[in-house]
Amino acid sequence: MLSLVRSEPNAFTPEEIELAGLLGRLVATAVQNIRAYEAERKTVDELRRLSALRADFVSLVSHELRTPMAAVIGSARTLQQRWRELTADQRESFLELIAGETGRLAALIGDVLDTSRIEAGTFSFRFGEVDVGQLVRDSVATAQLGQDEVRVLADVREPLPQVRGDVDRLRQVLMNLIDNAVKYSPEGGDVEVRAYGEDGLVRVDVRDRGPGIARDDQRLIFEKFGRVSSGGLARPGTGLGLFIARSIAEAHGGVLEVVSAPDQGSTFTLELPLDGAS
Ligand code: ADP
Image 1 (tube, rainbow, N blue to C red):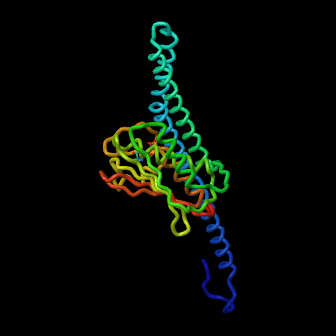
Image 2 (image 1 turned 120 degrees about the vertical axis):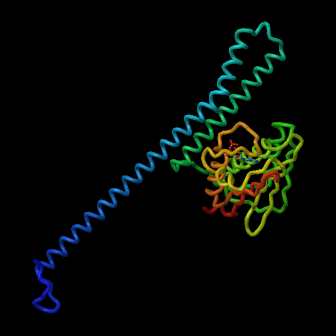
Image 3 (image 1 turned 135 degrees about the vertical axis):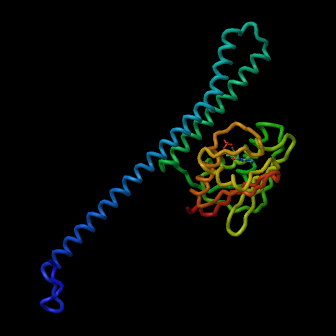
């Protein structure tokens, strides 16, 4: 039995010393066990995340890859088997369909690769001086060339300071925002892309008069594979574009946000610091 009476006021008994040692070993073992448990829990979480990603990927592949692939294979076969009986116009429309669908496939594969690089931390950037005004004008011209159902307007408020950034990645962000704005606009609608300098930042607003996005959905759309019904409009897509766009904005030390409400349209704002510091 442990004696609680000390021989000298400040000296510990051998039993107390042994007990302290035992307690120390017990605490050390407990800490080790907690750490092992934590590591195991992290591995399980990571496995769960990977498994969810794989499930997302499988469903993406079945929906988004199969449809364009079937169209490409079908059109190529038709052209091969019925070349002689088809008119020049019919051949032209099959070729157009093949070009359009393979373009969609290439964009989809690009998005999937970008996403896996972002997750792996190997998404690379080449920083230089970027003229955001020029980038806005170029992106608007490209969006306008690709379709004539929606009018896309550039409004660059000069003088606009240059920012430090990766011009190709920033173009990717703008094209994604403008393509979405066009995709969700009613026919004959306007999309406005406004660039301006404010508080030592450069901001680009992409505004549309589409169905808008409910407040509860506004977080989800920036997540990987995050898609919502957007006023009941079913549009093709993967739900990866805004996830990639926000990652690029953040790698520039910037932000990408949305202000929207149902039936009020949407305004996506890309905000970039001048020095590209992250
Ligand atoms: P995708 O367009 O390929 O589905 P995004 O990540 O670019 O992927 O967009 C995610 C979702 O956000 C879209 O599926 C759509 O529901 C919603 N969204 C994006 N932009 C708009 C917009 N301008 N108006 C309404 N909804 C939008």
